[in-house]
Length: 466
Image (cartoon, rainbow, N blue to C red; front, side):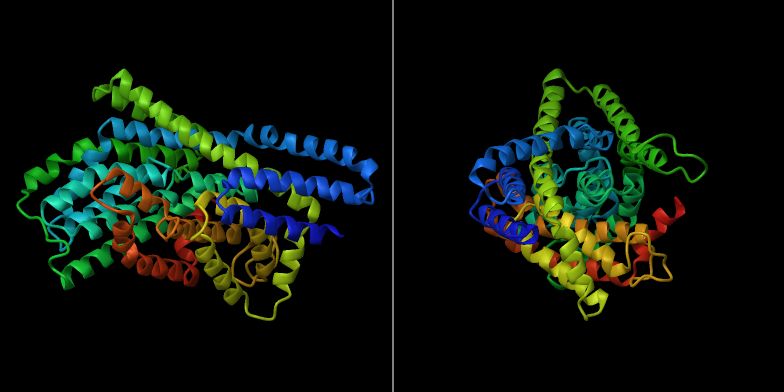
Protein backbone atom coordinates (compact mmCIF):
# COMPACT_ATOMS: atom_id res chain seq x y z
CA UNK A 1 0.00 0.00 0.00
CA UNK A 2 1.48 3.37 -0.99
CA UNK A 3 1.68 6.38 1.38
CA UNK A 4 -1.27 8.19 -0.27
CA UNK A 5 -3.57 5.24 0.36
CA UNK A 6 -2.37 5.00 3.96
CA UNK A 7 -3.06 8.72 4.34
CA UNK A 8 -6.62 8.32 3.06
CA UNK A 9 -7.36 5.34 5.31
CA UNK A 10 -5.96 7.03 8.43
CA UNK A 11 -7.77 10.31 7.65
CA UNK A 12 -11.02 8.39 7.24
CA UNK A 13 -10.43 6.75 10.61
CA UNK A 14 -9.80 10.15 12.18
CA UNK A 15 -13.10 11.53 10.84
CA UNK A 16 -14.91 8.44 12.15
CA UNK A 17 -13.45 8.91 15.64
CA UNK A 18 -14.47 12.59 15.66
CA UNK A 19 -18.01 11.78 14.48
CA UNK A 20 -18.29 9.14 17.22
CA UNK A 21 -17.50 11.81 19.81
CA UNK A 22 -13.79 11.44 20.59
CA UNK A 23 -12.04 14.71 21.40
CA UNK A 24 -10.23 16.16 18.41
CA UNK A 25 -6.89 16.39 20.23
CA UNK A 26 -6.81 12.71 21.18
CA UNK A 27 -8.32 11.45 17.91
CA UNK A 28 -5.74 13.40 15.88
CA UNK A 29 -2.81 12.27 18.04
CA UNK A 30 -3.93 8.64 17.83
CA UNK A 31 -4.49 8.81 14.08
CA UNK A 32 -1.13 10.50 13.56
CA UNK A 33 0.76 7.95 15.63
CA UNK A 34 -0.95 4.97 13.97
CA UNK A 35 -0.32 6.54 10.57
CA UNK A 36 3.39 7.06 11.30
CA UNK A 37 3.75 3.45 12.46
CA UNK A 38 1.97 2.27 9.32
CA UNK A 39 4.11 4.43 7.02
CA UNK A 40 7.43 3.33 8.55
CA UNK A 41 6.36 -0.33 8.74
CA UNK A 42 5.32 -0.31 5.08
CA UNK A 43 8.80 0.87 4.13
CA UNK A 44 10.15 -2.36 5.65
CA UNK A 45 7.71 -4.50 3.69
CA UNK A 46 5.26 -4.96 6.61
CA UNK A 47 7.51 -7.64 8.11
CA UNK A 48 6.54 -8.53 11.69
CA UNK A 49 10.20 -8.48 12.67
CA UNK A 50 10.33 -4.80 11.70
CA UNK A 51 7.22 -3.72 13.64
CA UNK A 52 9.24 -2.92 16.75
CA UNK A 53 11.56 -0.68 14.71
CA UNK A 54 8.60 1.12 13.08
CA UNK A 55 6.96 1.64 16.47
CA UNK A 56 10.16 3.10 17.96
CA UNK A 57 10.77 5.50 15.07
CA UNK A 58 7.10 6.61 15.00
CA UNK A 59 7.05 7.35 18.73
CA UNK A 60 10.28 9.35 18.50
CA UNK A 61 8.95 11.29 15.50
CA UNK A 62 5.64 12.04 17.21
CA UNK A 63 7.36 12.91 20.48
CA UNK A 64 9.41 15.67 18.88
CA UNK A 65 6.32 17.56 17.72
CA UNK A 66 4.90 19.07 20.94
CA UNK A 67 8.18 20.60 22.14
CA UNK A 68 9.42 21.79 18.74
CA UNK A 69 6.17 23.59 17.91
CA UNK A 70 4.91 24.79 21.30
CA UNK A 71 8.31 26.24 22.20
CA UNK A 72 7.72 28.70 19.36
CA UNK A 73 7.57 32.29 20.58
CA UNK A 74 4.54 32.92 18.38
CA UNK A 75 2.32 30.65 20.46
CA UNK A 76 2.97 32.75 23.56
CA UNK A 77 0.55 35.25 22.02
CA UNK A 78 -2.38 32.98 22.83
CA UNK A 79 -2.27 33.04 26.67
CA UNK A 80 -1.52 36.78 26.76
CA UNK A 81 -4.48 37.59 24.50
CA UNK A 82 -6.80 35.36 26.53
CA UNK A 83 -5.54 36.89 29.78
CA UNK A 84 -6.29 40.40 28.48
CA UNK A 85 -9.93 39.41 28.00
CA UNK A 86 -10.43 37.90 31.45
CA UNK A 87 -8.65 40.76 33.20
CA UNK A 88 -10.78 43.27 31.25
CA UNK A 89 -13.89 41.48 32.48
CA UNK A 90 -12.80 41.50 36.12
CA UNK A 91 -11.73 45.15 35.79
CA UNK A 92 -15.30 46.06 34.81
CA UNK A 93 -14.23 47.29 31.39
CA UNK A 94 -16.79 45.14 29.60
CA UNK A 95 -19.71 46.61 31.50
CA UNK A 96 -18.35 50.12 30.93
CA UNK A 97 -18.07 49.43 27.22
CA UNK A 98 -21.61 48.09 27.06
CA UNK A 99 -22.95 51.07 29.00
CA UNK A 100 -21.25 53.52 26.63
CA UNK A 101 -22.57 51.70 23.56
CA UNK A 102 -26.07 51.64 25.07
CA UNK A 103 -26.16 55.38 25.76
CA UNK A 104 -24.98 56.25 22.25
CA UNK A 105 -26.81 53.66 20.10
CA UNK A 106 -29.83 52.31 21.99
CA UNK A 107 -32.22 54.87 20.46
CA UNK A 108 -32.18 52.90 17.18
CA UNK A 109 -34.76 50.18 16.48
CA UNK A 110 -33.19 47.17 18.17
CA UNK A 111 -30.67 49.64 19.58
CA UNK A 112 -29.79 47.67 22.69
CA UNK A 113 -29.00 44.64 20.51
CA UNK A 114 -26.89 46.83 18.21
CA UNK A 115 -25.14 48.18 21.32
CA UNK A 116 -24.42 44.60 22.34
CA UNK A 117 -22.87 43.81 18.96
CA UNK A 118 -20.59 46.86 19.05
CA UNK A 119 -19.70 46.21 22.68
CA UNK A 120 -18.75 42.61 21.86
CA UNK A 121 -16.67 43.93 18.96
CA UNK A 122 -14.90 46.31 21.34
CA UNK A 123 -14.33 43.55 23.87
CA UNK A 124 -13.11 41.29 21.07
CA UNK A 125 -10.39 43.85 20.43
CA UNK A 126 -8.85 43.00 23.82
CA UNK A 127 -9.86 39.34 24.01
CA UNK A 128 -8.94 36.52 21.68
CA UNK A 129 -11.62 34.12 22.90
CA UNK A 130 -15.11 33.91 21.38
CA UNK A 131 -16.40 31.66 24.13
CA UNK A 132 -15.30 34.11 26.83
CA UNK A 133 -16.94 37.00 24.95
CA UNK A 134 -20.25 35.12 24.65
CA UNK A 135 -20.19 34.13 28.33
CA UNK A 136 -19.43 37.67 29.53
CA UNK A 137 -22.18 39.37 27.52
CA UNK A 138 -24.73 36.67 28.30
CA UNK A 139 -24.40 37.90 31.89
CA UNK A 140 -24.35 41.62 31.06
CA UNK A 141 -26.50 42.25 27.98
CA UNK A 142 -29.27 39.63 28.01
CA UNK A 143 -30.79 40.78 31.38
CA UNK A 144 -30.92 44.37 30.12
CA UNK A 145 -32.55 43.38 26.83
CA UNK A 146 -35.14 41.22 28.60
CA UNK A 147 -35.91 43.99 31.11
CA UNK A 148 -37.22 46.29 28.34
CA UNK A 149 -39.21 43.62 26.52
CA UNK A 150 -36.85 42.04 24.00
CA UNK A 151 -37.75 38.64 22.62
CA UNK A 152 -35.57 36.27 24.69
CA UNK A 153 -34.59 34.08 21.74
CA UNK A 154 -33.53 37.11 19.73
CA UNK A 155 -31.54 38.51 22.68
CA UNK A 156 -29.73 35.21 23.11
CA UNK A 157 -28.99 35.00 19.38
CA UNK A 158 -27.49 38.51 19.37
CA UNK A 159 -25.06 37.61 22.16
CA UNK A 160 -24.08 34.26 20.62
CA UNK A 161 -23.48 35.85 17.20
CA UNK A 162 -21.72 38.90 18.64
CA UNK A 163 -19.35 36.64 20.54
CA UNK A 164 -18.04 35.18 17.28
CA UNK A 165 -16.44 38.52 16.40
CA UNK A 166 -13.56 37.68 18.77
CA UNK A 167 -12.40 35.06 16.26
CA UNK A 168 -11.67 37.71 13.65
CA UNK A 169 -10.95 40.98 15.42
CA UNK A 170 -7.37 40.98 16.77
CA UNK A 171 -6.06 39.87 19.15
CA UNK A 172 -7.42 36.56 17.83
CA UNK A 173 -6.18 33.17 19.01
CA UNK A 174 -7.51 31.46 15.86
CA UNK A 175 -5.62 33.86 13.58
CA UNK A 176 -2.44 33.09 15.51
CA UNK A 177 -3.04 29.35 15.11
CA UNK A 178 -3.65 29.80 11.38
CA UNK A 179 -0.40 31.76 11.04
CA UNK A 180 1.55 28.99 12.80
CA UNK A 181 0.04 26.16 10.74
CA UNK A 182 0.63 27.84 7.36
CA UNK A 183 3.85 29.60 8.45
CA UNK A 184 2.73 33.15 7.61
CA UNK A 185 3.41 36.52 9.23
CA UNK A 186 1.32 36.84 12.41
CA UNK A 187 1.44 40.63 12.41
CA UNK A 188 0.02 40.99 8.91
CA UNK A 189 -2.73 38.47 9.64
CA UNK A 190 -3.73 40.35 12.79
CA UNK A 191 -3.81 43.58 10.82
CA UNK A 192 -5.94 41.94 8.14
CA UNK A 193 -8.59 40.99 10.70
CA UNK A 194 -9.49 44.53 11.79
CA UNK A 195 -11.52 45.77 8.82
CA UNK A 196 -13.36 42.45 8.12
CA UNK A 197 -14.16 42.20 11.84
CA UNK A 198 -15.58 45.72 11.95
CA UNK A 199 -17.39 45.04 8.68
CA UNK A 200 -19.00 41.90 10.17
CA UNK A 201 -20.19 43.93 13.17
CA UNK A 202 -21.76 46.54 10.86
CA UNK A 203 -23.54 43.84 8.83
CA UNK A 204 -24.92 42.38 12.08
CA UNK A 205 -26.08 45.86 13.15
CA UNK A 206 -27.86 46.51 9.84
CA UNK A 207 -29.60 43.13 10.11
CA UNK A 208 -30.76 43.86 13.67
CA UNK A 209 -32.12 47.32 12.77
CA UNK A 210 -33.95 45.82 9.79
CA UNK A 211 -35.55 43.06 11.89
CA UNK A 212 -36.51 45.48 14.69
CA UNK A 213 -37.99 47.92 12.16
CA UNK A 214 -40.21 45.26 10.57
CA UNK A 215 -41.12 43.47 13.83
CA UNK A 216 -41.23 46.30 16.37
CA UNK A 217 -41.95 43.99 19.32
CA UNK A 218 -38.66 42.09 18.84
CA UNK A 219 -36.38 44.87 20.05
CA UNK A 220 -37.88 48.19 21.19
CA UNK A 221 -35.59 51.25 21.18
CA UNK A 222 -34.34 52.88 24.37
CA UNK A 223 -34.45 56.68 24.67
CA UNK A 224 -33.93 59.28 27.37
CA UNK A 225 -30.14 59.55 27.52
CA UNK A 226 -28.87 63.13 27.48
CA UNK A 227 -25.73 64.24 25.67
CA UNK A 228 -24.11 64.82 29.06
CA UNK A 229 -24.79 61.20 30.05
CA UNK A 230 -23.42 59.96 26.75
CA UNK A 231 -20.14 61.83 27.04
CA UNK A 232 -19.87 60.86 30.71
CA UNK A 233 -19.85 57.17 29.71
CA UNK A 234 -16.79 57.48 27.47
CA UNK A 235 -13.89 57.81 29.97
CA UNK A 236 -14.63 54.44 31.58
CA UNK A 237 -14.54 52.74 28.16
CA UNK A 238 -11.41 54.50 26.89
CA UNK A 239 -8.89 52.04 28.43
CA UNK A 240 -10.02 49.35 26.00
CA UNK A 241 -9.26 51.60 23.03
CA UNK A 242 -5.87 52.43 24.55
CA UNK A 243 -4.99 48.72 24.67
CA UNK A 244 -6.14 48.28 21.06
CA UNK A 245 -3.93 51.17 19.90
CA UNK A 246 -0.93 49.73 21.77
CA UNK A 247 -1.37 46.31 20.14
CA UNK A 248 -1.74 47.91 16.69
CA UNK A 249 1.47 49.92 17.12
CA UNK A 250 3.34 46.80 18.21
CA UNK A 251 2.10 45.02 15.08
CA UNK A 252 2.33 47.93 12.64
CA UNK A 253 3.33 51.55 13.23
CA UNK A 254 2.13 53.77 10.34
CA UNK A 255 4.61 56.47 11.38
CA UNK A 256 7.76 54.35 11.50
CA UNK A 257 9.07 51.03 12.74
CA UNK A 258 6.79 48.82 14.82
CA UNK A 259 7.32 49.18 18.57
CA UNK A 260 8.02 45.46 18.95
CA UNK A 261 6.69 42.04 18.11
CA UNK A 262 3.02 41.01 18.41
CA UNK A 263 4.05 38.82 21.37
CA UNK A 264 5.52 41.82 23.17
CA UNK A 265 2.41 43.84 22.32
CA UNK A 266 0.19 41.17 23.87
CA UNK A 267 2.32 41.11 27.03
CA UNK A 268 2.30 44.91 27.36
CA UNK A 269 -1.47 44.96 26.75
CA UNK A 270 -2.03 42.33 29.46
CA UNK A 271 0.11 44.30 31.92
CA UNK A 272 -1.78 47.53 31.24
CA UNK A 273 -5.17 45.86 31.71
CA UNK A 274 -3.83 44.26 34.91
CA UNK A 275 -2.93 47.72 36.26
CA UNK A 276 -6.39 48.99 35.29
CA UNK A 277 -7.99 46.07 37.09
CA UNK A 278 -5.99 46.80 40.24
CA UNK A 279 -6.95 50.48 40.02
CA UNK A 280 -10.62 49.50 39.76
CA UNK A 281 -10.39 47.37 42.88
CA UNK A 282 -9.77 43.85 41.65
CA UNK A 283 -9.06 41.53 44.59
CA UNK A 284 -6.88 38.42 44.85
CA UNK A 285 -9.85 36.08 44.38
CA UNK A 286 -10.76 37.75 41.08
CA UNK A 287 -7.14 37.73 39.88
CA UNK A 288 -6.94 34.04 40.76
CA UNK A 289 -10.11 33.33 38.76
CA UNK A 290 -8.76 35.27 35.75
CA UNK A 291 -5.47 33.36 35.84
CA UNK A 292 -7.18 29.98 36.27
CA UNK A 293 -9.64 30.62 33.42
CA UNK A 294 -6.76 31.73 31.20
CA UNK A 295 -4.78 28.61 32.08
CA UNK A 296 -7.74 26.30 31.40
CA UNK A 297 -8.50 27.79 27.99
CA UNK A 298 -4.80 27.91 27.04
CA UNK A 299 -4.24 24.28 28.01
CA UNK A 300 -7.29 23.23 25.99
CA UNK A 301 -6.02 25.06 22.89
CA UNK A 302 -2.44 23.81 23.30
CA UNK A 303 -3.64 20.21 23.76
CA UNK A 304 -5.55 20.41 20.49
CA UNK A 305 -2.48 21.88 18.78
CA UNK A 306 -0.22 19.11 20.11
CA UNK A 307 -2.53 16.33 18.98
CA UNK A 308 -3.23 17.78 15.56
CA UNK A 309 0.43 18.55 14.84
CA UNK A 310 1.26 14.84 15.30
CA UNK A 311 -1.35 14.13 12.64
CA UNK A 312 0.11 16.90 10.47
CA UNK A 313 3.57 15.30 10.75
CA UNK A 314 2.05 12.04 9.50
CA UNK A 315 0.41 13.87 6.58
CA UNK A 316 3.81 15.16 5.57
CA UNK A 317 5.19 11.61 5.37
CA UNK A 318 2.10 10.45 3.46
CA UNK A 319 2.33 13.43 1.04
CA UNK A 320 -1.45 13.78 1.17
CA UNK A 321 -1.39 17.63 1.04
CA UNK A 322 0.65 17.57 -2.18
CA UNK A 323 -1.61 14.97 -3.78
CA UNK A 324 -4.73 16.95 -2.85
CA UNK A 325 -3.20 20.17 -4.18
CA UNK A 326 -2.36 18.48 -7.49
CA UNK A 327 -5.91 17.11 -7.75
CA UNK A 328 -7.53 20.48 -6.97
CA UNK A 329 -5.32 22.43 -9.38
CA UNK A 330 -6.08 19.86 -12.10
CA UNK A 331 -9.84 20.40 -11.96
CA UNK A 332 -11.33 22.15 -14.97
CA UNK A 333 -13.73 24.33 -12.96
CA UNK A 334 -12.88 27.98 -12.35
CA UNK A 335 -10.63 28.64 -9.31
CA UNK A 336 -13.19 30.92 -7.66
CA UNK A 337 -15.89 28.23 -7.95
CA UNK A 338 -13.55 25.68 -6.36
CA UNK A 339 -12.80 28.15 -3.55
CA UNK A 340 -16.53 28.64 -2.91
CA UNK A 341 -16.98 24.85 -2.76
CA UNK A 342 -14.15 24.63 -0.21
CA UNK A 343 -15.82 27.29 1.95
CA UNK A 344 -19.15 25.45 1.71
CA UNK A 345 -17.38 22.27 2.81
CA UNK A 346 -16.12 24.18 5.86
CA UNK A 347 -19.70 25.21 6.64
CA UNK A 348 -20.80 21.57 6.64
CA UNK A 349 -17.75 20.33 8.55
CA UNK A 350 -18.27 23.02 11.19
CA UNK A 351 -21.62 21.48 12.08
CA UNK A 352 -19.75 18.54 13.59
CA UNK A 353 -16.42 19.94 14.81
CA UNK A 354 -15.22 22.83 16.94
CA UNK A 355 -13.61 25.72 15.09
CA UNK A 356 -10.01 25.32 16.22
CA UNK A 357 -9.96 21.57 15.67
CA UNK A 358 -11.56 21.95 12.25
CA UNK A 359 -8.96 24.44 11.05
CA UNK A 360 -6.04 22.52 12.49
CA UNK A 361 -7.15 19.29 10.85
CA UNK A 362 -7.99 20.70 7.42
CA UNK A 363 -5.46 23.46 6.79
CA UNK A 364 -2.44 21.19 6.21
CA UNK A 365 -4.32 19.70 3.25
CA UNK A 366 -6.56 22.56 2.07
CA UNK A 367 -4.08 25.44 2.31
CA UNK A 368 -1.57 24.01 -0.22
CA UNK A 369 -4.48 23.31 -2.58
CA UNK A 370 -5.75 26.91 -2.42
CA UNK A 371 -2.24 28.26 -2.95
CA UNK A 372 -1.85 25.95 -5.95
CA UNK A 373 -5.14 27.26 -7.33
CA UNK A 374 -3.79 30.80 -7.17
CA UNK A 375 -0.57 29.79 -8.92
CA UNK A 376 1.75 28.92 -6.03
CA UNK A 377 3.11 30.54 -2.88
CA UNK A 378 5.50 32.82 -4.78
CA UNK A 379 3.26 33.81 -7.71
CA UNK A 380 2.95 37.50 -8.58
CA UNK A 381 -0.40 39.27 -8.64
CA UNK A 382 -0.25 39.59 -12.44
CA UNK A 383 0.16 35.84 -12.96
CA UNK A 384 -2.26 34.66 -10.25
CA UNK A 385 -5.78 33.26 -10.56
CA UNK A 386 -7.28 35.41 -7.79
CA UNK A 387 -5.49 38.64 -8.73
CA UNK A 388 -3.14 38.70 -5.73
CA UNK A 389 0.36 37.55 -4.90
CA UNK A 390 1.04 34.31 -3.02
CA UNK A 391 1.60 35.95 0.41
CA UNK A 392 -1.51 38.11 0.01
CA UNK A 393 -3.55 35.07 -1.02
CA UNK A 394 -2.41 33.33 2.17
CA UNK A 395 -3.69 36.28 4.24
CA UNK A 396 -6.98 36.55 2.30
CA UNK A 397 -7.69 32.83 2.60
CA UNK A 398 -6.83 32.97 6.31
CA UNK A 399 -9.47 35.63 6.95
CA UNK A 400 -12.03 33.65 4.91
CA UNK A 401 -11.49 30.41 6.83
CA UNK A 402 -11.50 32.21 10.19
CA UNK A 403 -14.77 33.85 9.19
CA UNK A 404 -16.06 30.36 8.38
CA UNK A 405 -14.88 29.29 11.83
CA UNK A 406 -16.98 32.14 13.28
CA UNK A 407 -19.93 30.83 11.32
CA UNK A 408 -19.39 27.37 12.79
CA UNK A 409 -19.53 28.73 16.34
CA UNK A 410 -23.29 29.30 15.94
CA UNK A 411 -24.34 26.45 13.64
CA UNK A 412 -26.14 23.42 15.11
CA UNK A 413 -25.54 20.88 16.49
CA UNK A 414 -22.05 21.82 17.79
CA UNK A 415 -22.30 25.64 17.81
CA UNK A 416 -20.22 26.25 20.93
CA UNK A 417 -21.27 29.86 21.54
CA UNK A 418 -24.93 28.78 21.66
CA UNK A 419 -24.16 26.18 24.33
CA UNK A 420 -22.20 28.75 26.34
CA UNK A 421 -25.06 31.28 26.29
CA UNK A 422 -27.56 28.58 27.28
CA UNK A 423 -25.21 27.44 30.06
CA UNK A 424 -24.91 30.94 31.51
CA UNK A 425 -28.67 31.60 31.24
CA UNK A 426 -30.66 28.70 32.77
CA UNK A 427 -33.92 30.31 31.56
CA UNK A 428 -32.81 29.66 27.96
CA UNK A 429 -32.57 26.29 26.27
CA UNK A 430 -29.99 25.51 23.60
CA UNK A 431 -32.86 25.26 21.11
CA UNK A 432 -33.92 28.83 22.02
CA UNK A 433 -30.43 30.14 21.30
CA UNK A 434 -30.17 28.28 17.98
CA UNK A 435 -33.53 29.71 16.90
CA UNK A 436 -32.48 33.22 17.90
CA UNK A 437 -29.19 33.03 16.02
CA UNK A 438 -30.74 31.85 12.73
CA UNK A 439 -31.00 35.34 11.10
CA UNK A 440 -27.28 35.84 11.63
CA UNK A 441 -26.54 32.96 9.25
CA UNK A 442 -27.75 35.30 6.48
CA UNK A 443 -25.53 38.12 7.73
CA UNK A 444 -22.48 35.85 7.80
CA UNK A 445 -23.24 34.53 4.31
CA UNK A 446 -23.43 38.11 2.99
CA UNK A 447 -20.18 39.05 4.72
CA UNK A 448 -18.30 36.04 3.35
CA UNK A 449 -19.63 36.68 -0.16
CA UNK A 450 -18.44 40.29 -0.04
CA UNK A 451 -15.00 39.30 1.30
CA UNK A 452 -14.65 36.86 -1.61
CA UNK A 453 -15.88 39.38 -4.18
CA UNK A 454 -13.84 42.32 -2.82
CA UNK A 455 -10.51 41.05 -1.42
CA UNK A 456 -9.35 44.63 -0.84
CA UNK A 457 -11.55 44.70 2.29
CA UNK A 458 -9.11 42.18 3.74
CA UNK A 459 -5.85 43.16 2.08
CA UNK A 460 -5.77 46.96 2.33
CA UNK A 461 -4.28 47.19 5.85
CA UNK A 462 -1.66 44.41 5.47
CA UNK A 463 -0.62 45.90 2.10
CA UNK A 464 0.32 49.11 3.95
CA UNK A 465 2.68 47.12 6.16
CA UNK A 466 4.66 46.09 3.05
